[in-house]
Length: 274
Image (cartoon, rainbow, N blue to C red; front, side):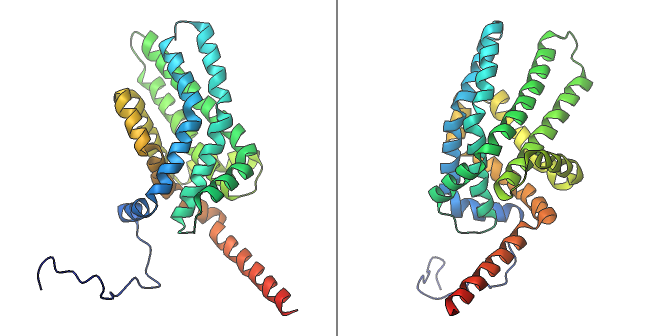
């Protein structure tokens, strides 16, 4: 048999029905190659919704010496969460479906997630974006004004950013998957962040490090290109791969959904027999 003599019509062994799911990098590339079009599209919609926030951040950097401009930029930054919050929730809804290997009709699921999550997604996004903004502002002001920057203060800023980013991730996944009030949701997010460090730490760090590198260490044209290619959604997918098993372990969402589907199927069969 020649090296390149492939018989594409011959049936192969296939994938065993009870074959375990791939893990780690193999699982990521499986989802990436299978669902890239949906990942990229959710990324594009997120970028469109993030334009007001990105503009506010740029103006605050360019005109930081003008207090009035900074104040207006801060207001725009907060109000931009009206779009950013639901866009994040919708994107994570799509990503979680991909992680669970559930069928996903993109526009139907995206619009459904937006309509069902926006009331909670907006205040959650406002809260955590404000915390992250204040942490970043504190760190930047300290670096610009201090003769000798304090490693302790900068470490506290980074710790605060990690907690905020990871809690934001857990809160966003919760509001897309469960019907829960914001107070308990935020409490759960903080407990999950601190109680499951084995998974929470890499989930938060992959977001924090990626954003820091893209914004602070890469030229803006390259950052824009990477963002358009789909890097933000890819980073979110990696973070969800770490965070989603924690949500499953604590709340057993898939099991509850399976029980609900079985109950609904039994009711439909009983109604059909009558």
